[in-house]
Image 1 (cartoon, one colour):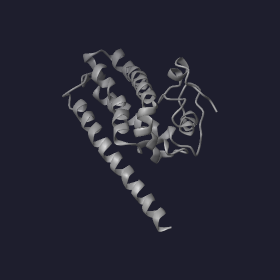
Image 2 (cartoon, helix red, strand yellow):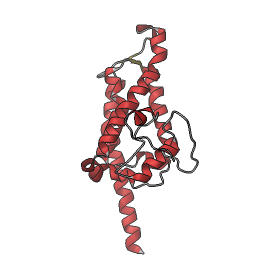
Image 3 (spheres, helix red, strand yellow):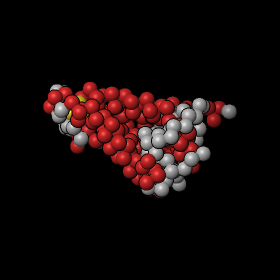
Image 4 (spheres, one colour):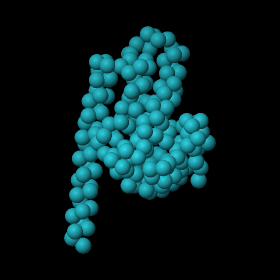
Length: 190
């Protein structure tokens, strides 16, 4: 009994270390974008025009979703999955806490996938912050396996919980929308 508790405690400590290191590196990247040392953020709404500014969050999220889809598929290659991504998939029935439980390298790749569009795609600073907050909230939603909700064109929590069920060979890689999975033949429904 005592060995099991020590092992469980060590696993929890390891997860916390992976989460902290992973996020500290990629959050530094986010800081450089936010402070305009890198990236294409802008403050003045009229700099790009009102219509562009209003449309940009939707285009940004589509671009972000595609970037995440590609990096997530890459994380499921045998080399990366067995070394890094399996930690996140050890949560077969994910919860909101599972969203950030991953190897620090995996965490960096994920966070960079969420922010890399800001390097190439001009977006208003405040709208970018709203997109980042939405990203965190959506991550909690899709990892909630307690109350599965089906949304027609979205990669909802029913889709993502199925993704966790399958492990390395997988389906439903996208983050927000299920069209990337449908286009690339990786969509599966319950």
